[in-house]
Amino acid sequence: MKNWTKGIFAAGIMAAAMFQPASAETIKVGSKNFTEQFILAEMYAAVLENAGITVERKINLGGTLIAHQALVAGEIDLYPEYTGTALASVVKGEMSTDADKVYTEVKDFYAKQFNLTWLKPSGINNGYVIVVRQETAQANNLKSLSDLAKVSKTLVFGGGAEFPDRADGLPGLKRVYDAEFKEFKQFAKLGLRYDALDQKDIDVANGAATDWQIGSKNLVPLADDKGLFPPYYVAPVVRQDVLKANPKVAELLEAVGTHLDNEKMRVLNAKVETDHEEAKDVAVDFLKENGLLPK
Image 1 (cartoon, one colour):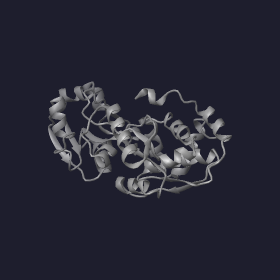
Image 2: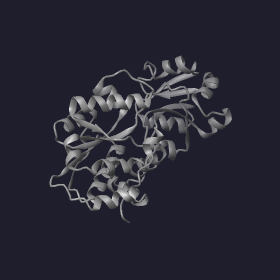
Image 3: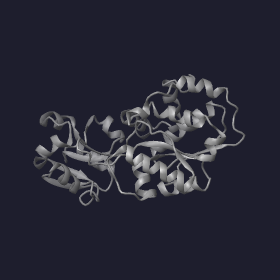
Image 4: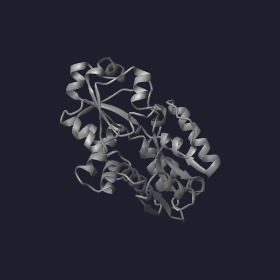
């Protein structure tokens, strides 16, 4: 995965793109219906506009299948998607913890079935993650899920309604890590889970790797050292006809991904969720800071 985020020099790409003729057609950038998607879509739109391409934003379309159908139908030309989500919801393939295998399967399926291209993944892997408070990690020397398993019977776990039954939930933690917890507490909403962790009503919680609460509440995400959770790397998915008509689009969008990882995405999500900044402003500021847009 690491090689996907190397070798692209953003400044050179920007300079080259500025000398390319703008597309006669508008490129329609879409997104799904949550904060991270809004930010990523705004980043994609901004770098395309900076290269002289006319962009129409169709942000906040809805869930995965709605956005996917819009892309297939040509209502949008591209949007950010996650490899694990695509495998489960669109390809309906067998889940795997092998990131390269998942990406290749998804990429090939989309190309053959829909004439869609998965560009190179970013450094964001927004898969499942198990988190604890700093004090819990320090007291028990927790860095990984293997470490957690050694003390799990003394800790209270908080999770969503489905977590006790999911193959990659409590049964998976038992199967892969032999981890069993003192008690499980159910929370309908993700925010309540993090509040309970902060208030010490629970000791361990499951979330998504780019949840803003992880950074803002100074929580410790534990390494999935035995590969229980499938990969959810984010990448732009683009209509093939758009890439043919605009050869620089791939380089421009992939350059954005080289500057992104889970930690950075948590910070960006927090700016929108807690600081109430506009997703477009957050996206543009980040691109400027990283040399992808002129200051």
